[in-house]
Amino acid sequence: MKTSRPIRARIAPAAILHNYRLAKRCAPQARAWAVIKADAYGHGQWRAVEALRAEADGFAVLECENAVALREAGVTQPILLLEGVFAPRDVRAVVEQGLNCVVHCSQQLELLVRHVPAGAPLAICVKLNTGMNRLGFSPATLPGALELLSRQLPQAEITLMTHFADADGEAGVDWQVARFAAMAGDWRGPVSLANSAAILRHPSTHRDWVRPGIMLYGASPFAEQSAEALGLKPAMALESAIIGVQDVAAGERVGYGGTFTAERPMRIGVVACGYADGYPRHAPTGTPLAVLGRRTRTIGRVSMDMLACDLSDIPEAGVDAPVTLWGEGIAGTVPADEVAAAAGTIAYELFCAVAPRVPVVVDQTAAVDRK
Ligand SMILES: *Cc1c(COP(=O)(O)O)cnc(C)c1O
View 1 (tube, helix red, strand yellow):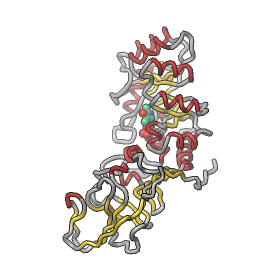
View 2 (cartoon, protein in one colour):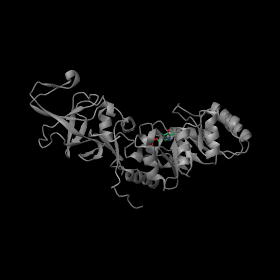
View 3 (tube, helix red, strand yellow):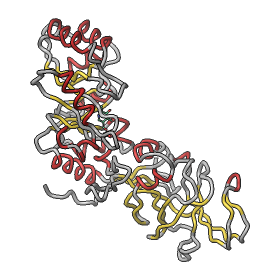
C-alpha cells in the first residue's frame, strides 16, 4: 500500500544485477546460486528474480512453495532448496518441478528414498558438517548416507556442499576445507562451498557452485571492509522525512526514558521511522543517518513510529526535509553496514526486518551497467 507517510524502501534491481556480476567476476570458473531466501533478504523475491533471471545460473530458496512459484513464473534455471525437503509433498514437487535439494540428515534421506519414484531424475546437494555444527552429515554418518544413496537412488546427481562458519573472520576457512577434503575422500563430482565472504576473500573455495547472498544486496560480509571498497552497490535505501522539529534548551532530555540530555541548546528533528518500520530499537544515540544531503546522528531511544536526530548543524533542514536511514537515498548515502554496526547487528538483519507497512518503490531509472 502506498501511504502518504513518507517512509519508503527504495529498491534498485540494477544494483542487484551489478553485484551478481561482481560475484561472477570473482569466481569466473564457478556457477552461482543467487540466494534469494527471506524474500531476497527483504528486497522482494520477485524483484531479485526479475533483476537476475536473464543471467543467474540458479536460484537458492528455503521454501518449496517458493521454488514452485518460481517454476510457475517460468524460471528455467536450477532452483536449490537450501534446507531441503520437510514433507512428502515437497519430495513430489522436487521430482515434478525438477528442483535441486539439499540433503543434510538421514531423516531427509529417508523421505527421498520413500517418496521419489523409481528412476526419477534427481539432483541433490549432500551437506557435510565441517565445523559449523548446524546442518550436515558428520564423518561418521556420511559414508552410510552415500552408500544408501548409491543403492536406493542410483540415478541421483550428487553435489557435495558445506557452509563456512567464519569465512569473514579470524578463523577463516582452511580448517573447514581440510575437514571437507578428509570427508570427501576421492570424490570427483561437483562441490559447492562458498558464501559471499568466501567468494570475495577465499578463491580456493570457489569450486563448481558458489552461493552469493548478502553481496547481491550490496552489503559487506566483513566487519572491517566496506561494501564500497569491495565494489558493491547498495540495493536498498530506507528513506523518510522530518515530520517535526524541536528547539531544546541545554539540560532538556529527548525521547522515552530521557536517555539523551542536551548539553547545549539543540535543534532536534523527528523522523517518520521507528522500530515498527524495522529500524533497530537498539540503535543508540549516534547511529548515522543523512538529512538533506548531510550526515548526522540519531538522538535518544528509537520509538515505535519515530526517531529523533540532531539538526543543530543543518539549519536548512525543517519539516519535510528528506532523510536517508540507510543506503544510497534521496538525502545522501549511509552504508547499511555502518547503521548495523552502530546497532550491534549486521545489515542482513536490517534488510530482513523492514516491516510490511513500509511501502516499496522500485528504482527503474538506474541504468543497468553493461557487461
Ligand atoms: C544464506 C546462505 C548463503 C548465503 O550466505 P551470505 O553470507 O549471505 O552470502 C549461502 N549458503 C547457504 C547454505 C545459506 O543458507
